[in-house]
Image (cartoon, rainbow, N blue to C red; front, side, top):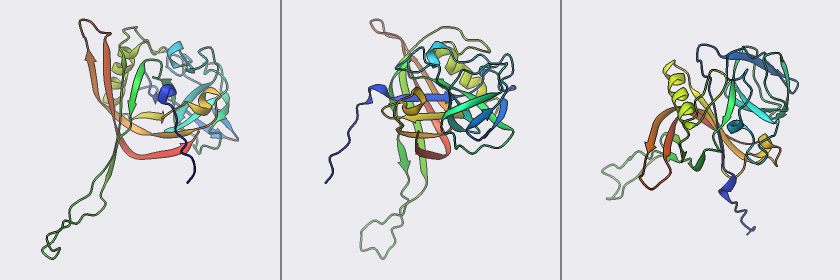
Length: 239
């Protein structure tokens, strides 16, 4: 038996994709390891990435990310309104046709200290009168959620800046109220290639926020819980 490869969760990574204005979502395409998109002024993508969105281990890093048609990619430079071509440093082979929506990758990790990614698998009962009193089952549908918890931050956001956790969570609510799905990527132990580290196991997909719970304790830091209800397939890959 091989030695188990256990890992510490201190660098768990959760990032989400959304825009502060669901009516203005940038579009682009990926070809030859490059992302072509000219961010529209007044969008979160055009505003680049704020401090809270930067790499965990190197806060001054210029490694940034995006979701292109729901697929997470990393870029070597910050997004800007005057730039149209970005070299992909992570997931350069991602398939995305022209006109694909491009959402900024907002890193929640600096705000949170707990992430859970449960997979629920239904097992419908198939017991009949001929089973001699023993229950039988078959494999049914799968469902996924992403739950996370962390510290409340009331910093205001804008059309081009994320702000703190409260601004982010309320932006998510407004985004999905406009009929949009939230993109997400989760790394159990490390952000991997998105911060220049060794690529690691990642899970990504699309979801809807179905919980935002603020908690105030008289002798405790104000905290919050959130939950994403995943819709559709979750992709497991190395990024």
